Image 1 (spheres, rainbow, N blue to C red):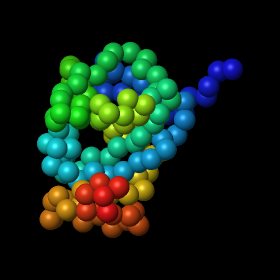
Image 2: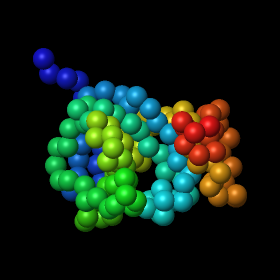
Image 3: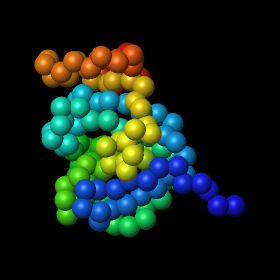
Image 4: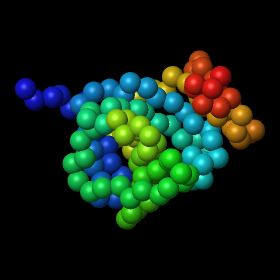
Length: 137
């Protein structure tokens, strides 16, 4: 039985393309300094899947070890931020919501690392907020 395609996305130049076979089980806005610097943006929005729910159609991400356990994936050709991966949890695939062809299909439900949020940014939504990560508060 063929699985339905739920979401599609890729990088700016089109070298990397993916599709998912489900909606994400979680989605968030991250305000940590590493996400800011790696994406070149003041906030990064992520969506989480089980690894088997994501199919890479073409190309592959290049990973940078931003810490001992964290790998940040990007397109080597255009630099688009694509993935976040914790080496201790290979069963999960975290993708950038901005990499979706239609990012309106996924809405984050919470903010993390709000203790690092830039002071001039005001986001007026009803999402839950955590000073650090979701499990620490």
